[in-house]
Amino acid sequence: MKNIMLFAFLVFITHTSYAQQPVVKFNKEAFQRNLVGQHGITLQWISWDYRGTVKITEENNVLKIRGVQKSKENITDSVR
Image (cartoon, rainbow, N blue to C red; front, side):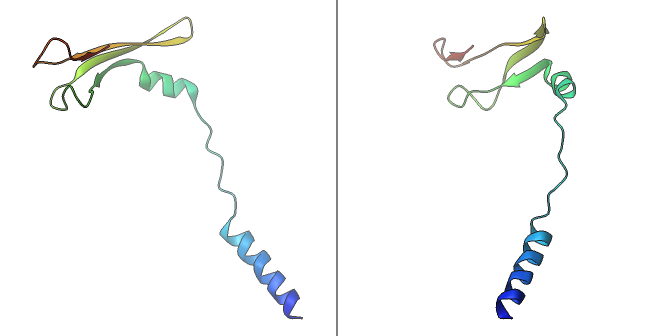
């Protein structure tokens, strides 16, 4: 009898505690609309105080990214 009660309790706990959450569908079009455009970029050892710029475009159903951040302190530090 103890085994049946334990089994029933475990089934109840498992069913109520780990019920599946609804699946959230990924909306690729909305993601791309929010991503395409101009954004800021920073690289830790160049500067957190000022940003470079990154432009994300879509060409022939392909997302392309182009950007740069240059150091104001020397000409050798940059990210492209």
